[in-house]
Length: 310
Image (cartoon, rainbow, N blue to C red; front, side, top):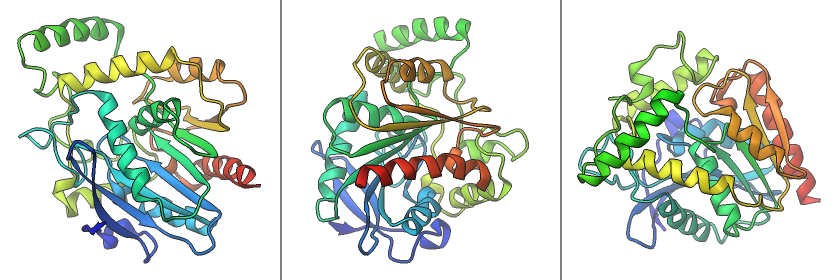
């Protein structure tokens, strides 16, 4: 693997953390970060959400290391320092959602030398990518999801209008433009801490915003029309599948307002043995919430991983 830039001063990850370039089968360049731990209990593969990047999980890597786990994170295609898919780098785009599985394959292969067992920790859009990966046979001992994107949140009237608009724009070949009504800039640059939907922890908000300020290339705005269409199609497909027979925990904040709660609740109702952890007063970024909220979820996740190593 070729060394890649890693901004340790803003990641606040353990010093041994490093970043590397890898390439998906279709030639898209990706970036991964690896935090090895001596005599690790196993490896936690972090699947970040939309707009996210390796450095955002620096503190989480540190918490995992303290509990004895090596970890890794990835810049998915179209975000972070990975190859952007359109001429306008601020538009989040993917041709088809299963393309992310090419990233998953390259990510897993790049980690072949790290000790097993492997575990999945997936957030938001990473939760959609992760669930499909599990359904397609990704080999992990246990899986954890925080606020997984198993549906797309839109008011009923907007949902109907958007579905019609998506088909119209696709028919005229304009589905790579930014979806109407979505952000023009990074959420962290468009909003202040007051009233934000990500976290109630001011320190974590400042941590995330400082990263975008320091490395503007990390910034990502709204998704393309095609991304929205593909996300809707992929989520609908996943909800129809038999859930994987893998020990799983899902954490969902009571103040979640970015991904819809109902698909998560519906999926968990039909997933034998999987546990839904409700985190009171937590917003979307559960692992970047106030420590008492974060640890409610993280302790349950790592208890599951610990149990799976036994």
